[in-house]
Image (cartoon, rainbow, N blue to C red; front, side):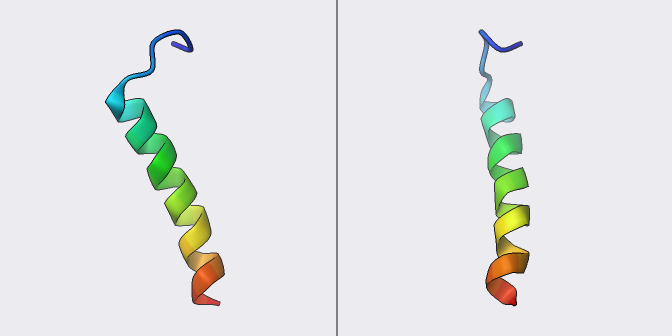
Length: 27
């Protein structure tokens, strides 16, 4: 899993980070 980074994995990671950042910026 680690040696194979798929676009979906990066997309999921980006989505997770965005979801964590958006609430912080909204406040």
